[in-house]
Length: 479
Picture 1 (spheres, rainbow, N blue to C red):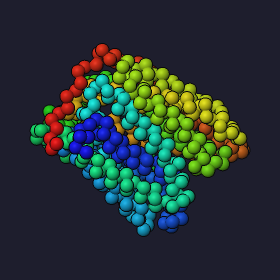
Picture 2: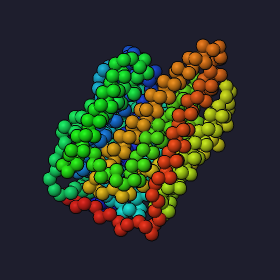
Picture 3: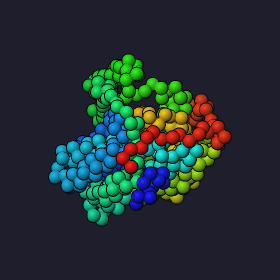
Picture 4: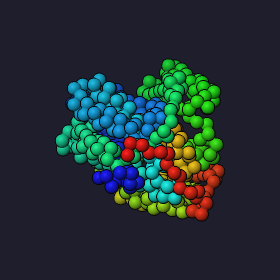
């Protein structure tokens, strides 16, 4: 295996295994909720915390973990994240009660937060700029595969070997990825001493927790005064964090403001949040429609969504390569417009008795759109980032991604419940009420995607001829 040490494609394979595992756990748990309630004697509220606790911890710690990767070495943080995530998966699979499972899921979130930002950092470090788009395309393909595999794999595991295996299936993947990490991933560091902004970490953690918890749990607590107070505290803490960071820009801040001097990084980080909001804003109500109106099983509902993920997986690497050659600006705009068109088609096709196959053309269009967006969005955001700041950039980018998902879920979830109740109160049948509600909730994701397409007008495009010389990675030690 010595000859594979530092090989970019071997590194990408290793990173993809860890990345796949953490994204899979964002979606695979939802399908097992009824079985977990029965198996643990848990309440619905406790079981929902099994889902939301993981996402909450992940969102809160991403910026801190990204900066830690810059300071301590991305390979070290990636390996630590894999170890924590794998051990926590064992604890989840063996949990005797709901409280133990929620705690283990929170630890899983810590592991995922440690490793996710390092994937983009290491891709930037081991791939030259001219080939980074292809690598990011494969990275995006892994995200599509995890999205596809979650509901389908979860349904198969729950119906055959039981819900505990949705966690235990991570163990062999995690062990394999950990072994490969030390065999093929270079230990890349700057070779100089570092400071760690503990005050910034504490403020950022409190701010992100307040915002993420308030948005994620607001509907469950009926948007009580305490939730609004928490959100207000989150905003105030965010302002305090930014002021603190401004005073520490010369002392290795958690969020280097130099990142935002690059217009592409700024615009595309905003776009990441909009696309994440749109994805959850479509999948959540559409999945409920398939199961509650068309009465499809969870596995069949997942398979209806499969064409979108399959197409995006196929298109992603080609879109990444094309982004390297001609730049991502117009590719992004075309992809976003296709995605919006596909979403609109899905909503218009949805009826009380629509056959599942009627959605295939629309889901293929959404897959084309997503496939054209994921790779260029990541590539162009990171293209001009100084490798020494790649961890911080990845932490910010992935935090915005998670916050976008939380905002999308909270907004669409709240709108779905309130609008559906109003339609039912007006005397409509459940099917007609849900379809009318679907038309309303679709406004958010479609608007977010079209706003993203307009924002892409601000992106500075490049051609292959304009690509700078390949970025020389910072010194690698411990080879």
